[in-house]
Amino acid sequence: MSRRIGVLTSGGDAPGMNAAIRTVVRSALHYGMEPWAISRGYHGLINGDMEPIKSRDMSGIIQRGGTILKSARSDQFRTPEGQAKAAAMLDEKGIDSLVVIGGDGSFKGALHLEKLGINVICIPATIDNDIACTDYSIGFDTAVNNVIDSVNKIRDTASSHDRVYVVEVMGRDSGYIALYSGLAGGADVILIPEVPYDVEEVCKQIEWANGQGKTYNIVMVAEGVKSVSGKSPEESPSMEIGHYIQEKTGYDTRITILGHIQRGGAPTVRDRLLASRLAYQAIELINQGKSGKMLGEVDQVVKAFDLSYALAQEKQLNLDYYHLSKILASI
Ligand code: F6P
Image 1 (cartoon, rainbow, N blue to C red):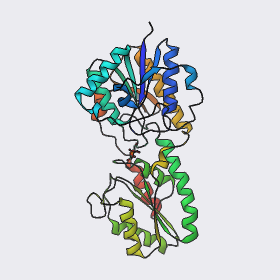
Image 2: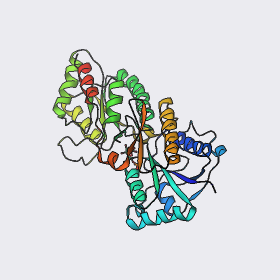
Image 3: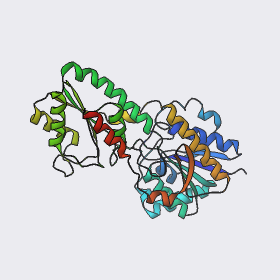
Image 4: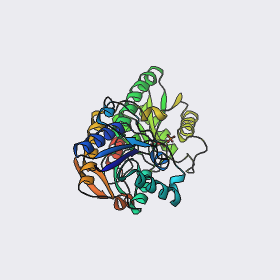
């Protein structure tokens, strides 16, 4: 009997997950393995929601956002009983290796399974790009491009009405999306969880810029920033910030929360390539008998890291981008 390997997606979906699934399946077949698709992440794993999958099932998915395997949260899998049940289910189906495509929460789950004797290889996929040991995670590039697409449109209307636009983007604890799209979208101000801010300074910056002849402004806010007072906000931080700006400066201000639009849509070339390269390497590692690894791309090279090491690292935001955006907004 050929070796059986399972693949699942877990956590928030990310564009490019399908490209990764496709490569896992086809590379497994290339190595003479039998790929099994597990639906709805760890929830489906516990419930035995899995079946063998063929190469042709992968046709026409590389360009689709989301995940054909679906994703779900599983409270049961957070418990040792749930984890044991998941491992037993894999045993029952004769699957000895698992490729987990998701974010760090999914990787922690994978580490539990590893300790229960399952071979696991993890592939980073989250629009937040908050996973260490990889420059980018699958989905980030598409999400940032989605944001830029929206910001371009917001600029049209902002400039027509001489308004301030506060644009809130995703990133629960991470400023990556706000920083990259803020810099690429020419924002006047970028607010990210990693750097404390003073709303008075934000107002001053807008007033100064408009004093220099600007007629509209973009303030890019990561959803994870603290409230104006520094505490966790009661309402969305961008609402609070927008209302404050309107009141303080008198400029007509609008707030746009982009929300899940950022997470959908066809993956960019960059995400498809990243997904394909990491997924191929996942099968290579399984073929070599490796386990407990996370794959990442660092300086354009695909590398494998011990999962427990990767999980212990904190992803560092490149603050050069932040400083550059400040310079560009200050002249
Ligand atoms: O996948 C990451 C993410 O999009 C975060 O940026 C966001 O805070 C969260 O997921 C939203 O989660 P949900 O889709 O469960 O509302």
